[in-house]
Length: 159
Image (cartoon, rainbow, N blue to C red; front, side):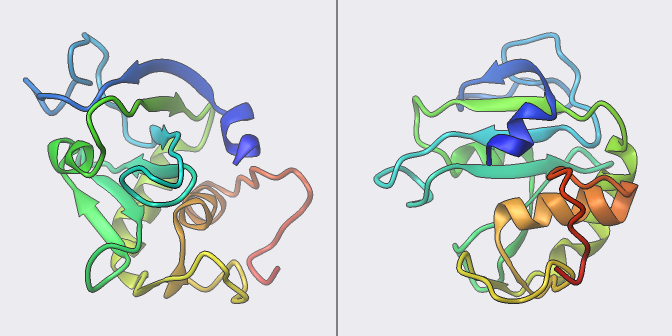
């Protein structure tokens, strides 16, 4: 998870409460951008029951992510719905990729519904979308949507 944070530029943090305008991050004059990566630091006893969660803003300002809640793992939420998945007091950080944001956002919006099962202990190759988890989905969006490997160790979809 540190690789994702270290290689993206943070420019705002938001707190999960009301949203006056879905094109702006709540309580700010910062415009949402396609490809923004949302990161929430979590502990075992918080809303997702896992440590940390990432999502990406799509070209339609919807939030695309993979989590274990519900029948299908791939999710397309409004910012309000996404924020409601977090407890009050949890912080969501916004990171803007230095390049490739549009391609990654488009890839996520096209492929999120292919994520059928949530498996954090995942032996499937990185190319497998159907068996997925949140950070793998963001890696896929950046890799397949913009040819960016966040790890800088040469991972491929077959890895």
